[in-house]
Amino acid sequence: MDSLDRQLIDALRSDGRASYAELARSVGLSSSAVHERVSKLESSGVIRGYRAIVEPSAVGLGVTAMVGIEPGEYGEDAVIAAALDAMPEVESCYGVAGDQAFIVKVRVPTVDDLHLILGALRAIDGVARTRTTVVLSTRFEGRPNRLATEEP
Image: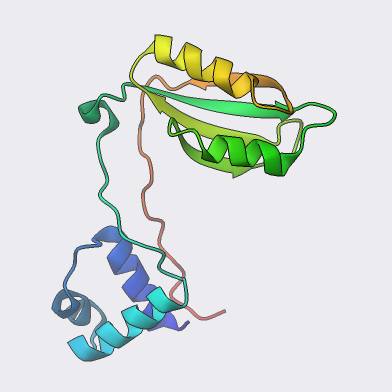
């Protein structure tokens, strides 16, 4: 991956709907060259997909919480991760170092729903306890960080 690929990735992270012509203008290549580069980035797995960014409260998900998952003595990370993956309320899951094996981002409609999902998280085989932080406001989220344009 060279600096042009990094510039294309930055441009697509800022606007995933940009046309090849717009991308070509931003990096100084032809549209066909940009199309070829983007296709290679997609096929190699560097670009994994494109998504709509949705306002959670606008679709009825007014409560966000970060939940730490601490496994018990015999808790298996793979079993816990599979159970977390099956829960649609779990938006993101991070394997972490420390007492907690995972931190998950949960989005639900109400505090009552949060109470229910926390019970479901604690009921996962191998989970000893959870630690919950309720999000009061989101200052920013999911913003694309700029990639270094220089080659390593």
